[in-house]
Length: 118
Image (cartoon, rainbow, N blue to C red; front, side, top):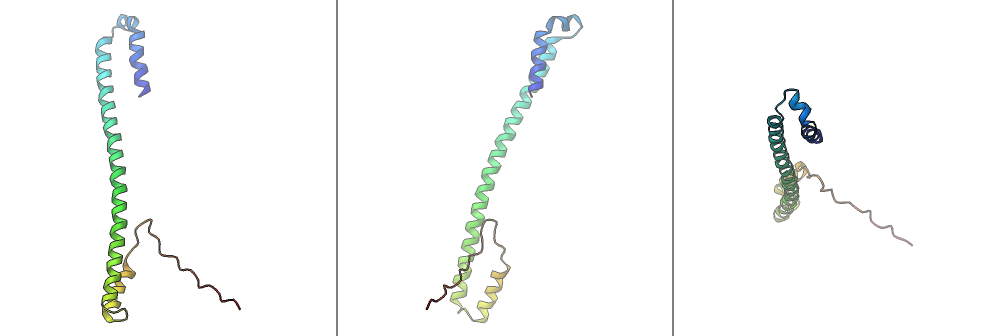
């Protein structure tokens, strides 16, 4: 909007020749200033909404991770409650294999067993 400010300034600095050329400088300046203010206000509103959206998105991602962790833990408890090798447990384990991990939650790293030294 720097260009607009330069035009507003030029309306003042070149007032006399512009009036002599038939322009209504006050009317033009008033119209330009009014529209400029409206644009500034809507820009501020847009920036505020962007900040709010970013905050809401971050909160949503955190809640999704917590939700995944809770659902995963409950599924583990359910599998344990119906005996790990049972038919019911196998059905529950199918749910686990279909669950997509949310972004940022990684599968646990399996460390190899240490080698025995003689």
